[in-house]
Length: 585
Image (cartoon, rainbow, N blue to C red; front, side, top):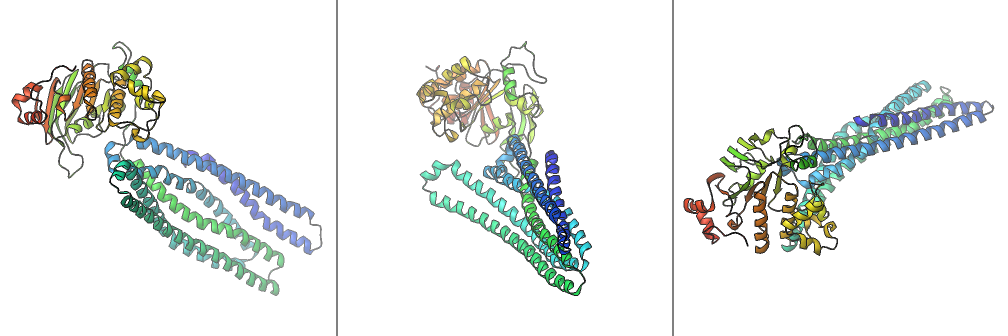
């Protein structure tokens, strides 16, 4: 709320003025009764009372509107900061979390904040002085009746003290259950075809229903305790009214007080009742809002990367400049990058076997270096450490002789083009996906990359060309088309270092041969690192790094490794590749 304090104060001030005018109304009503009792003219008092009612209502409505606007502003700011934080989170933090639960914190929990961040606080600020003022004025009217009233309202304090912590716990459990339901739904939708193919709709539906039932039970617990608290407040006010009516009537009959004072006291009691209800509701709302705020704060405490320096697209533009062009502070000059691993050790989590054990190798600028070996040898981990998705537990990863931990993440990744194993494609158009991270690339450069990635035929076939939507996660495209889009996206960045992780695994033989030629052409201008199980993809590499069980087993050319390394010979023999391939046709 701190950035929106002016709006909160304005809304509270207007609401407080309206409430203070409401406090004056019973006194005006008492004077009106006295004037009627004395047979004097009452038109002026009636007009004054009407004006007080009207002005109080206008001020209250204006304050309510300002507070509603401020609530929207608070939630808007929270969502902006939360989404920005989510996209800056470190990769390990996101991998440990459930995506559906993170989404629910941006959507469901901030919706709860919208209902509880401003209005309850403002209501409490308005209610407390109004209640104090009403109690003081009631005491001035009749201390005996005030004692009766406060005795009855003591039940409210007992009820709130007992129920408030339980409301908070139940609200927190309900919001956690909603997050778990979001995670379960994202799990199913993320593998929708797999669920369909396995005929597992019934089992997955049952799983979703269980999470929905958990959310319902937690919500019912919260609602139950809120009902107990609210009912106690309502009953207390009713008891107070009956007691005041009985005791006050007796006092009027005995002459201890007069009718006008009893009427004024009852009017104060009537004005007190909604404030009591409001305060009881505020306690429950603040408990729910506190639970939502804690879940939002958990995201803010998750480890995130710093975002410093110029925007990523500006850094991309820099890499395309000539060496004589001015550079941003700290930015590297264009040219192929060098890579070196110096005794790197790394495990994804404590307790898991190391993915890397004393890994060391050096990759010079320009040319193609391939990484081969059995599954789980640590090949993809090489790319994760270069990109700083993870950081080594020991040793150093060097880019241009500089530890990647010393690079600002934006500058580091602007120098790298990365094609992942599953070649993800985002919902949106084909153009959106190609220009992701390189929005300035267009025209002849885009056309050239489409040709090199063999995407021209796909663009011609699509009904809206580059502006055709590709569906959720690119589900309107084939696996090979998604891979070629990912390769084109990486090439458009004009990277100094190109990382290709199984980038042609889903291509047919003709497209794979063509893409091999494209990669070989790129290797003449930049540094290319390739991970592949199919040795036909990498046999013509300048150097091949053979990995096994998180270690570098051997480094050499295809011919050298065939003669010197048994594992590589075995891999080559299983793929009928025992001699260097000829140039691609």
